[in-house]
Length: 233
Image (tube, rainbow, N blue to C red):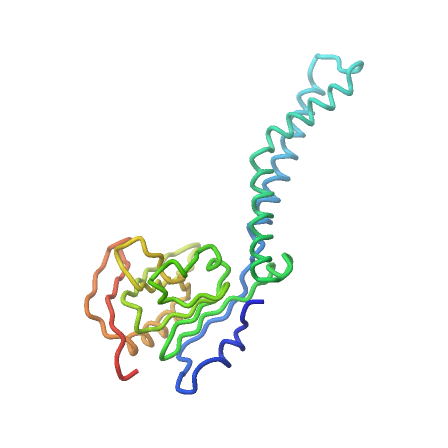
C-alpha cells in the first residue's frame, strides 16, 4: 500500500517544516473511460452503417441470414480492432498499477495525489511516478517508494516554470531538475493556479539562490532558474 499524506507528514524530522502543500484527487481510470467510449462509438457506428447498407442493398439475404450476421460481426470486429486493442491495453495498464500499489483497480478511480515542500525536501505522490524507474536516475539521489518520491532540496539545481491558457483558464507549471540539458527525467510536474504559483515561487526563492536565469528555452514565456539551496534554510 502506498503512503498517505498523513503518513508522510508524520515521518518528517523534528527540524523539518512544511512550507507549502497541495492535495488533489486524480481520476486514475480516466484513460479506461475514454477508451471504453471510443470502443462503444466505433462499434455502434460501424454496426449502424453496415446494417443500413445491407438493409438498403438490393442483395437478397433472406436465404443466407446466417452469413449476413457473420459478415456484420466480422466487419464490426475489423473496424473496432484498434479501439479494442486500446481498451485491453488500458485495462492491462490499470491492472499493473493496482498490483504495484496493492489496491483494487476501482480504487484508482479517485486516487489521492499530493505534494509537500519542506525546508529540507520535496515530496510528491502521483500515479505517473510508477511509469518511471527513478532508481535509475540521478545516481540514487531520488528516494522512490512506489508512487511517492523524496528529493533533497540540496540536489535540485534547476527550476523550470511556464504557463498555459486553456478555455480562459491559465495554469502554471513548475518542473524541478537535478540535472539540466541531459536525458535525465525531470522531477514530477506541479500544476497550480496563479495564486498558488505566486505563493510557491516566493517560497522557493526563499529557499534557493538564483545563480543564472534564462528565458524562452522551451516556450516563449518560460523561465529557467539555475539555483542553489541556501545554507541557512
